[in-house]
Structure formats: structure tokens, C-alpha cells
Length: 161
Image (tube, rainbow, N blue to C red; front, top):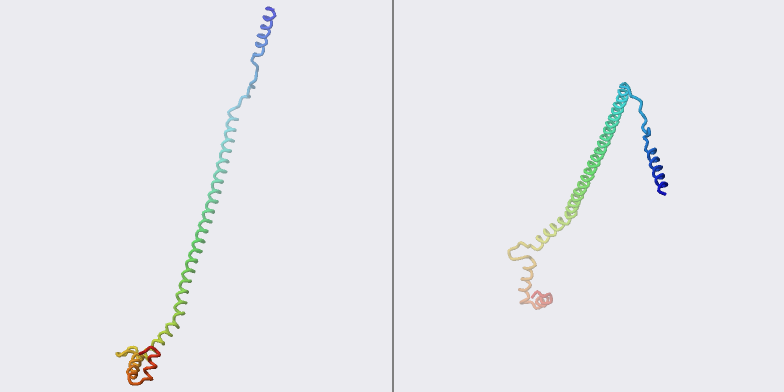
């Protein structure tokens, strides 16, 4: 049994030895010449220039879009200012119309009141130093009521005596 395990161990050791033999996993690359390197670098530089051109074209396009959007905002702002200004102008015009309408509405009323005032002043003589005509008439009727019972009765019925 001892030999058997020794044999097994040797076999295992040999199999491990053969398994770890270096193999050629890496392929040897063919040698690149300086000319090929220069050509590849030239192509890379051209590609870089193309990328730079595309980036600058995209940047110019984006700047154009932002300028267009800015112009739209400016136009919208100006439109809003114009609409707001016209709204304020319409409100002021409405207040002006209201004031004018009130003045024209009160003009006939004021003229009528002035005519009534002139008629009262003329008919009642409100500025007389002994009082108006009505006051003087009542005083005269009271004096007459002292001697005439009919007048006294009429003044009492009107609560003037």
C-alpha cells in the first residue's frame, strides 16, 4: 500500500510537471517599419483634424441656435411690452371717457340748477334786506290777521300764526 501511494504521488507529480510546461500563447507581431508608423500617425492627425472641424461646426451650429432662441425671447419680450403698453393706454382712455361723460352728463343739470336759482332769486328776492318776499308776505298777513278774523283763521289752519 505504501508503494501504491508512492506511485500515485509520483504520477501526480509528473502530470503536474508536464502541465506546467511553458506554451507559446503570445504570437510574435510582425515588425512595423518607420514608414508605416509615419503613415498611421498622418492618418491619426487627419482624423483629429476632422474631429476638430466637426466639433467647431457643431459649436457654430449651437451658437446659431442660441442666437436664434435669444432673438425669439427678445421678440416675445418686445411683444409683451407692446401689449402691456396698449392695455395701459386703453385703461387711461377709458378713464378719460368716463370723466368726459360725467362732465357732459352734469352740464345740463348744472345749467338747469343755475336757471332755477336765477328764477328763485328773481321771484323771491332772497337778497332783500328785510327778508324774502315770502317772509315779508307772512309778516304782512300776520299784521292783517290782527284786524281780520278770516285771515287769522286761514293763517292758523296753515300753522303760520
